[in-house]
Image 1 (cartoon, helix red, strand yellow):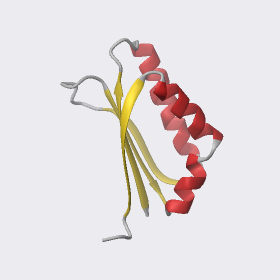
Image 2 (cartoon, one colour):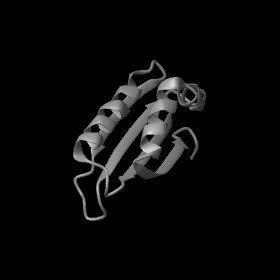
Image 3 (tube, helix red, strand yellow):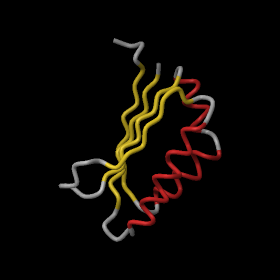
Image 4 (cartoon, one colour):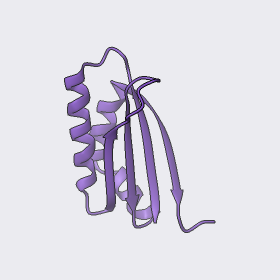
Length: 96
């Protein structure tokens, strides 16, 4: 399995409706056949600002790379680049 976790720190000037629309778009990005599990939620802890948590699982790295190269991912990445900074954690659960 391959895990892909992203923490999006939404910029302070972004409106709540724009955040909601982004969450909807991020959730839709998990509807690809390469995705085996997908969660997108706002963080309950807002001490450091508004954070969107994206947690994805793929069968393997190849499936992830196929998904990442797709148009849906490119579109949502462009949207998020305009409204957030983010940190990514990727790893394979097959590697100790």
